[in-house]
Length: 209
Image 1: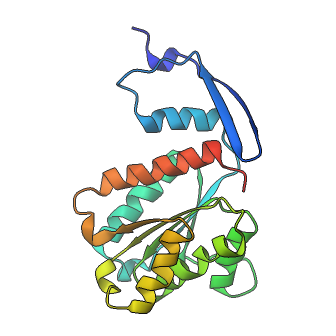
Image 2: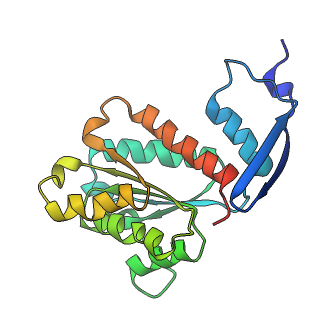
């Protein structure tokens, strides 16, 4: 059997409006090829060369072990996928902008410099980001930015405001992917692979915002 690495990926793309059709030819598929591998190859062929992900996380000293682990896995895989990575939240601050960290992040996303946002909502700064950045989808309904959030539901489950406000809005209105870190257990790598797969698919098919 031919080695999949020796089989070139030929892609013809075309589409109308927000619909992108991709025809893949001369590519050998078998059970040994992962979905991420195929997505990476398609992304290389047709995806935007200018794509970045903003990852917002609390300062390392205030982050839980689960957050530290998932943050490391996600940022490593983003870099491996040759995608620009920007760190925000309390972990790091975007310096350029109007002089206020939360507005700098907002403008960074609004100005189409960012295609996906991953938030680790664990302290006051990152819960603010959960609310603040997801509202961009309400302000700009045409935006195709992808949103992901990891949070500890147990820490806010008694807050009616948080559960029916920012968290419900993030999932229902902004169509973000929400993950409760308390339920992840030993599935960290599986969930991270799912997030990376979603990002790669978005980069390949919906990279223009």
